[in-house]
Image 1 (cartoon, helix red, strand yellow):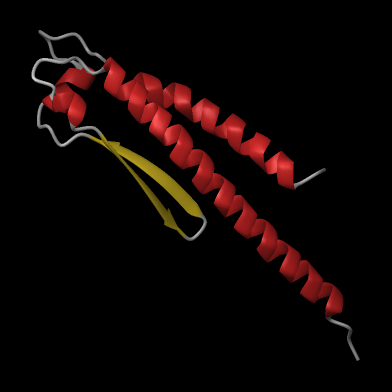
Image 2: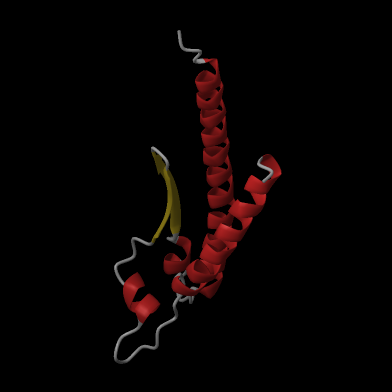
Length: 118
């Protein structure tokens, strides 16, 4: 007869750690996403305020994949972001997003260390 108690403990521990990782990912992404959004808005030029006020961030999770998405429904947002032949690019979202990705990774690892000791 086989003793499956060790396997059951392993499975239980694995599920607990997966849940913690998911919770940490959500917490870090939402917090850092809000910071990225704030920096994006700061970098957005203002004429009427419509472009700056239209920035949105959404968080989603599907299985083990966590995602934040930044968008701006103003039809001219991409021209201001990346520029044209006559307008210099502002990189309103590109710069904060690139910096923020490094911060997200660092903070995620730091938060996980609080739960998991090597």
